[in-house]
Length: 439
Image (cartoon, rainbow, N blue to C red; front, side, top):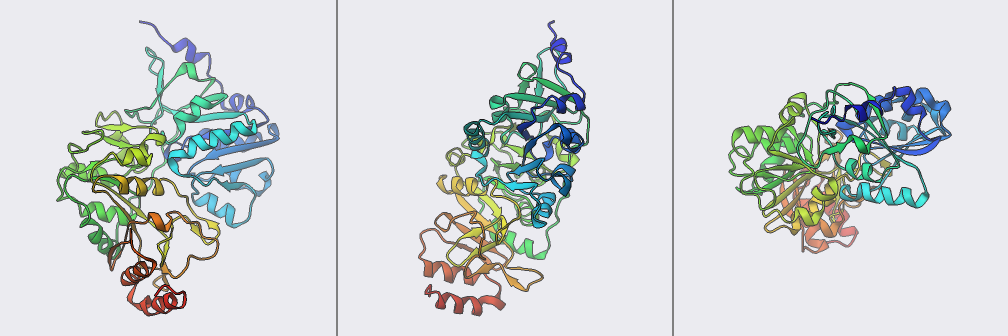
């Protein structure tokens, strides 16, 4: 039997050798979230003297890394990020020129960035974690994320694979061959996990309104957080649900175990969980590892609204920070301060609406800051990013009900949204709507 081990061994370098082999100016793309390149990201600052200016592109940093948080590295490193995590928020809040945000829709994130980098003449490096190689075939596996990773490997000038024995093997468009790699670095690290957010009474009430919109045989996209978890908990009595989602979440395993998810009635990829990345617990990663019922495909496919729309009875459930009275949704910023990112929210919301009998749902608590602020507002705060434009907004749900806005006038929208705002703010919102000429 032929073996690719010699090819592999010839590419193995130490972390120091691999980092110092990079150009002094380059754009280095990391794997995403659970598949971030922990070896590179935790040590690249040690070799700051090697670089003139290194752009490190990542998405939802899960851990704390000096290269994008320590002020002493300003000018030497820049972390360009598609979706801010806690460390990026803090650096941005402090005004450090170490982080920058890349506005994007998830299904276009990789392709758009590749085009921009090539137009600039930048050297593109992909550096991401993979499973150990199958010696007989020469294939390694991308593990828990293929949002943009596959595209970047195809486009990169230099490919560095960070082999981690703790990366799970996932079925789908997840294979990368050793012949595609220029350098291999061996670095074992635990895969980042996140806790399951237990829904409180308010989330459970919001979920009750959303659950009524989900019929038997629906295909779901469920986001992350207390509200989506609460929705999932209320769907266990449904029949033949399917999954076509950006992110695989813990609640999907629970719904499968309860018998609610079978994937059998899906009109696209029946019998398969379809997603583009996974982030959750060790239990989830073990469940996904080698599971033939899951299919992790590229984000450019999974999140394409035209692909999503091929799922009959598609329901997309996402959360927001605030919604104005005309239906503009902000899910990613606090005024002009970037908090998270668009991610796949607009992709899935649009795709669900285009599906036969589909629904796009945006959910939020009616108040914030311990009930002192209404999340339904006359106008978005100055500088807020519009994640879902008002002409795209379908359903909105709070703990006070769910309303559909498509096809409604501004006046009708304002009245509908006020009806699901917290009662203490309804008079104030009505007065503001009248002043703005909405009512």
